Image (cartoon, rainbow, N blue to C red; front, side):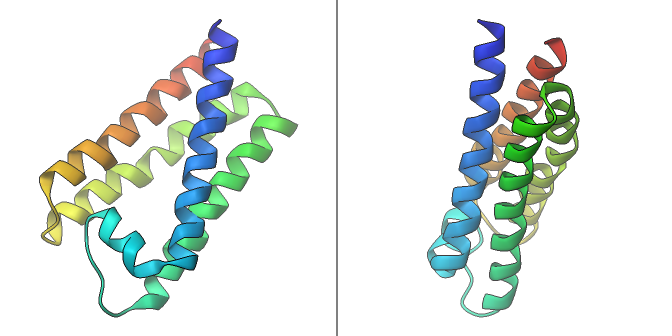
Length: 121
């Protein structure tokens, strides 16, 4: 049961961040609004975020498939910094507290939970 939960959550999280990255590449303005800080210009920065997020998702999946749970756990532990940083960005740039805490900080918590599950395997 623990193995299924740990791997399942890891796959889900990696696919979600891959999807978010692709959304920033395909529809940057609407993705930015969903992120919590709408953007009217600076599409290049939104594209950078899309590439970063898609890369995180692919690296996470590759680690899980080719290296294993322990490497994925370390990856999740480190990558949890990204949604913590996103929380700070949203708060500093006038985004809603609900999005900052309910989306970004909650994501960091789930990523850390999955890291703990993966370390427990």
